[in-house]
Image (cartoon, rainbow, N blue to C red; front, side, top):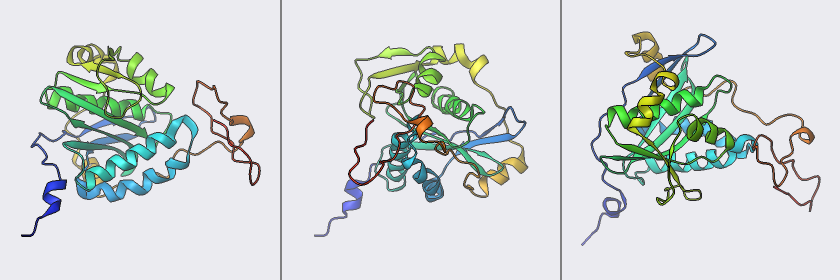
Length: 251
């Protein structure tokens, strides 16, 4: 008797409402569309994430490596109830956020990775992700961790998250923090921006295809000026490459 192993390996996704797309006006006046990404579009995201795996500044390396794996998990049907949102400016990828649904009341935030820097693109995209959990899915709270000082400031401090240190996060490492529906309502007026519906020309441009960013994050050109020491707490520098064969690398 033949056994279809794929049916055993593949989790059954729960039918959940889609994220309603919105448009955010950036400080430059550019219009950024945030929308849900289909499984068929994941191959368009992977080449944009892969180069950042080798970019140590601001902990892009670990975040990008994990996002890449999570995107593959979604694409290959190896994660239960995962979703992916993309932020696009004139079609170009500006940010990726993802997470999953644990239960009707609980959400699990995975990552927020910005490919366009300096305009709070990541912060706006994270807010959209929380909108999805709290407003669309009507969940009571979302479990969150941070992997960089920037993330800690943006999520834990700006949203005044509550500790859930007794609950391990699926990403491992640090314990969970939680954004509750009440906390989100308090932050809504200052941290959540954007309008709906998205004007048809903007939405059509975004849906036409995900274009790679023309100015993705890059390591600083001066390695000596940006060498991360072992006890660097800022996470804003990169590790200098080895001086030669056999040189030791320190973090």
